[in-house]
Length: 281
Image 1 (cartoon, rainbow, N blue to C red):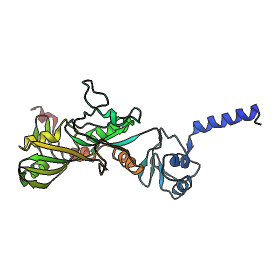
Image 2: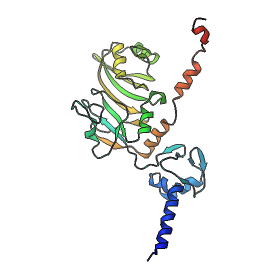
Image 3: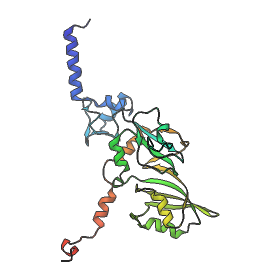
Image 4: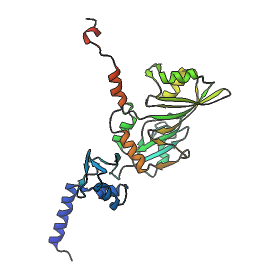
């Protein structure tokens, strides 16, 4: 039977371990990377980094809530309290967890999960992929256009779309709230009186896809978001939700690592303006 002294020593040891962190391989295994033995092998082979530094020592300790760990270049979410879901939102549902007007909202699809919320929005008339999570920091980065996370839509529009329309989507044009262009766009199918296109863009502006096609004279008849970053809607049925895989979560974490290169590239292309000349001096 343990003595009071041994109990105290065990308590002190546990407290010390909590302060120093948890063994890396233990945290990796708990996060679902692989078995602890395989995680140890990954560490020894130099495939694991902690806060940007490669580690090969099995005694390495980390704080799951603070330290950033990658395996073979892919970030790993060590905090097992974080939830990441994919939802196929139906038409007629607003992108909110609680609608003040009593309309159907997203909460009905995630009743088994606590404190999750949507990353970005789809208007009520648009269906398709919405990411749901309780990871506020990641959600902010994924929703902000400066991080360059693209969204892909399948668009059914009124009228026959000519090649010139696709060119305008790619070259861009001015809307009432500023310049906009698609990152990618292609005509998929043309039938009597309507056309089907696929468009990819990183803008998160309100109803942007619908407004783009309204401007071009082809009102949207149907709109589905099929992809968010590298996460695909796939065969997920309307109104259903699934948990993202470890690989998918890692891809989202990687997408949110830093600002989009678009920002820096645009800055490099922008002409230098002499402040004095700009003021007319």
